[in-house]
Length: 358
Image (cartoon, rainbow, N blue to C red; front, side, top):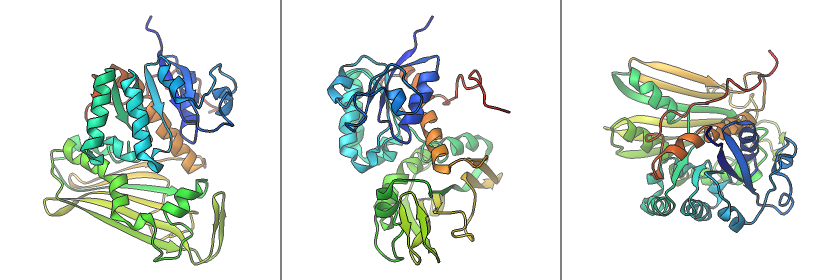
């Protein structure tokens, strides 16, 4: 009988807590360690931290302890976008120690070439040293902008343009720094924020666009970044803070790859703080891939269909895409392994688990 793969969970936040629960109930996986960032979590049972009760795995904030632990794979789920160089140091150390890594931490790592040759070199060097593999994933980017279009592409004779949209309500997303300081919610229109800068679009969306272009055998000539905002007429109170009247309560931003002189590939996010904001923009909860070509087609994927929390369901999907990637990544040859290198990430075992009420 094949032994379960030994897994370390790195970070127990919005994504990590879902990953802990999924790994614990998976018959082919065994959680053997957990890294946390706060003193309040260190020394506690990671199951208790993540709301599933004690499971016999004690969390630590000691990186050296994690590096010394024997494991097949590390689920690396911190908010690495806040400090990509530090996250890269962590991941390279893990890979060099002989552990495979599946990451949701930095969007650009979904296709590391988009982050620059130095990132590729460091990851490949660490993989070679540890005979390990690295894979980055997510839900958007990481699924809707990559896996869905690539899967659909086999149906087309020609693609003239491809648009991937994410439609989400961030009302319950309780991360003030991201909502207010980075995205610019609650700011006056025209007030400069990082989301106005094309470089932010490149950090978030160049990776899936480059991966798609390479996967479909095309060359990108240029990129276009666009952002629109809508203000609220009345104040809005959300867990992250207060949105005053006359400030940004909805935004629409996109990054487009120009191929052969046309806007060929576009990733667009339409993000609101309340379903009543910007009603003239496309509405919904989830992702849509619209293709103009031969044939033309629209594929829509909705989330939170029973009234659940949009952002929490998105974090759950992100965690599961990482958990289900563990086995193929562990079986892969050493090195960077993107969606173009791995087999289909399938949810093996999901039909065998006890179901909810019908």
